[in-house]
Image 1 (tube, one colour):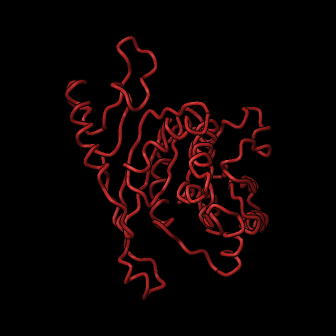
Image 2 (cartoon, rainbow, N blue to C red):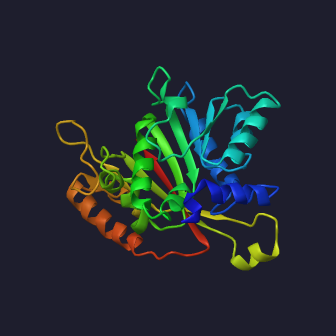
Length: 283
C-alpha cells in the first residue's frame, strides 16, 4: 500500500540525491516519445507526464524543443524540484501541478478554455502499478484511467509502463477499469504493447550504470477497433468489433478469431522481475 501514498515518495525523494529509474529507463521511453513527436502533424501536442518523481525527463524534452509540457505529481518535494528547474533556467512552457492522477478535479488544468482536454501525449511509468497497491486500488486506478482519457485530445496517445503482463492490465486500461469505478466507459481505437527485457538483476546489483534494455513489439497482445459497415463508431473492446492487430490482414471473422487466439497466448504470460511492458493506447 505504501507505493500509493505521497508519504512514501516523499521519504524516497529525501533519501536519494539523484533519480533512480525503475521498470524501463526514461532513455528507452524518450525514443518512443520522440518518434511520435517527429511524425505528429502540426501543431505539436501538449504533453502530460504523470508521476515522474525527480527525473529530468520533462526538462530534457523541453530543452529538445517541445515547449508545452505539464508535470503531474502528488509528492510535494518532487513538484518543488520541477518548479525550481522550470524557473532556472526559465522554461516558461513547463507547468508543474501537485495532484494525484486519480483525483476527480484538476482545477489547475481544468480551467483552461478547452476544459482540460488538451493533451496529445500522456506518459507514466509505474503509476498504475502503484495505485493498485492501495486497498481501494481498483477504484483509484479506474478513476486515473477515466481522468487521463477525458483530458486527452483525439487523436491522442497514452504511453503507460507496467511490470504486469497484458492479461493482467489490458482490461484495467480499457472499459473494465472505468466501469468498476462507476465512471464513463473508456474506448481506445488502438492498443499496442511493447515488451522490455531489462538487465539481469545480478547486473543491477553490481553496477550503478544503466544496463542494456531490449524492446520488442507484441502485436498479438494488442487490438485495433474496426469501423462498422455503416461507418459509425467502432464497437468497444471485448465484443466482435475488436480484433488483435496481428489479425487485421484477413477477413473480419478470420482476423478476429486469429487475433483472439494470439491474444490468449499473450494473456498467459506470468509476471517476471526482469520484464516490463509499455502500453500505447490511441484515443
